Length: 125
Image 1 (cartoon, rainbow, N blue to C red):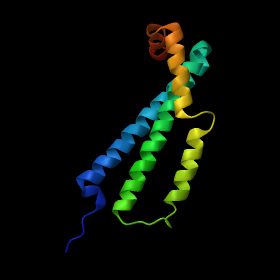
Image 2: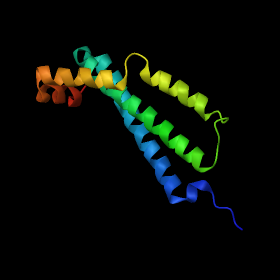
Image 3: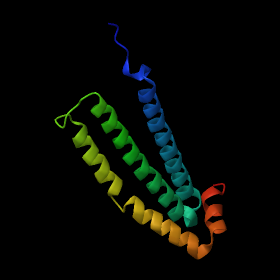
Image 4: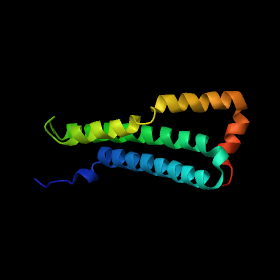
């Protein structure tokens, strides 16, 4: 019997592609927040909120996918993945949860109007 690499299996390849897409989105939000902090400090809180929300969603998605893939291979609780996951989730929740940042961003949008928030989030830096 010939062994097939895991990456050759479409569900595995798709899961890893989704993880990569999540990481790229989080990196883009972080880069944007850094640029905004350096060049337009008045817009920094909104850019920070978007980066924090994006990073939190990415952490959740990456952990979920890693556990699904390891579970499919029959890896048990003794694997180090649960230690890494707990640390990832601790980082995710430091300085406010995804929910608290999303509430703040939503409240800001409500107070200033969606067009104002959209302008802040999409303006050139």
